[in-house]
Image (tube, rainbow, N blue to C red):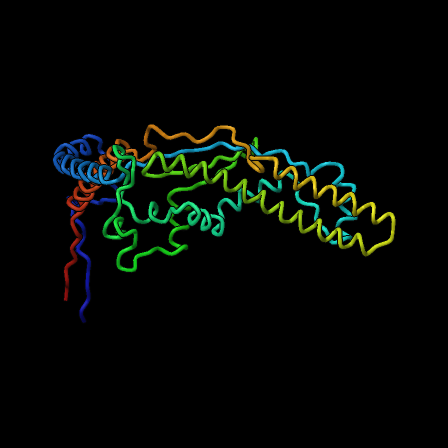
Length: 317
């Protein structure tokens, strides 16, 4: 009958799980493999330098906005709100809700798609490689866009989906300070001039968009109220309709009079003089640290393997 018996371990056998950490041994291990650490650190540092230099300079322009004070939250709204709803008319949202809506519209696909089309940003977004500071003009990617013929090459014209996606992910960001309600619009671009222009255009366009929407809704309400006014002979209801028509007319007048309708510019966008990214020094430092850590891990792993020889078993018949 065959059986396997384990040979008793000799006194010279090392048990890795029971070894105590020896600081001097760790130091000697690191010193003995210092060239591995140096080479790994240097290699990662060189890679970090190459990566950092390959990234283009990005400039950021920002504009600080404050919500404007709307008139729709007046006492008249509370008095006539119930009667307006019975008449089938909405008397509008208050200033805070308008700000929330405007903030969401500013990041919506429909608004940004229209923004790109209105200002002809398709080529700067997808057909350029950088910005020429001396000539203050875009450097076109001739593999994608033919600047002389003003046409895209090889059916590479981007779709609205691609344009909006790149604008949202790489260029435009909107944030709100929950404490004071201030809204900050940030625009990043390889061109500092474009970053300032786009930020200014976004604020102007969202104010114009919200104004046109309110004017359109108010004018439609006025027409509806005038129709209802002719259909009723009740004096009380006629008085309510007159008041509602007066209110909607005032809304149209105020909307046409206010240049900054929803957002008031507190700190306008300026052409940035310094790049915001990439942080090349930080990239190189982090890459060097990762290289050094990798070298240390390699040394410890090698020392662990060498200090733990496989235990042998003998076969006994």
